Image (cartoon, rainbow, N blue to C red; front, top):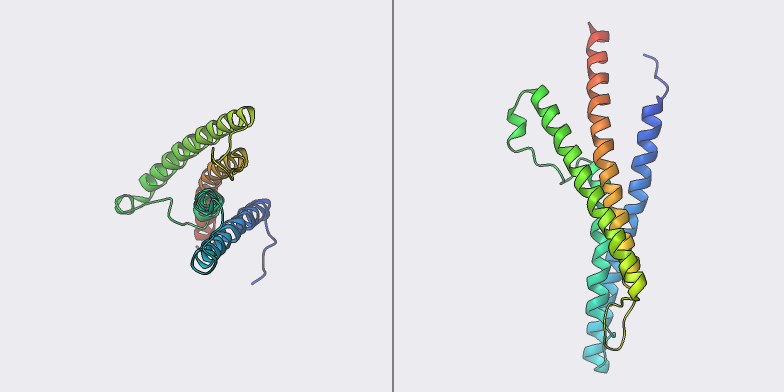
Amino acid sequence: MSKQSPTLYDKLDSVIVKIFKYVSYVSGVCLIAIMLVAFFNVLGEKILHKGIPASTEIIQYLHIPVVFLACAYVTLDTGHTRIDLLSKRLPKTVQTIVTTVGNLIGCAICAFVGYRGLVQMNKFISTHAKSSTTGFGFAKWPFALIFSIGFFMLALSFIWATVRLYVKKTETAENEEAAQ
């Protein structure tokens, strides 16, 4: 059996998955940062009676990249953005239609939320919004940007998941024909 060379779809799929995977690593780094901030804050409070200023806000805002930069990769890795409790009992054609409609609705919602995140980011930039009005505060706009990027990536992953659904379906049909 000879091994087929990768198609354009295979190459593109590999690139998209790698991009989403590497972006999701930022989530892991932020999760480690949350752990370190919490650890050193508790250590500082208990030993020196002085913790990290605004540690609660830092942890709160670091959750944005943790969640939203990993969603796209989770979607393409057949993760938790799809619940098929009922749809798996339907015929394959209906499952494909339901999945397609769900992915398109998910894409539209995520693209709209990403757009609104950019609107909010512009508002934060124009008003010089800070995370806190007292003492230590940092700009909010980078987190709105991360939020928007995450949602735009999720919208793209819904589209790509739909493409995968139909390409995989076509490849399966071709393989079945070749086997006969």
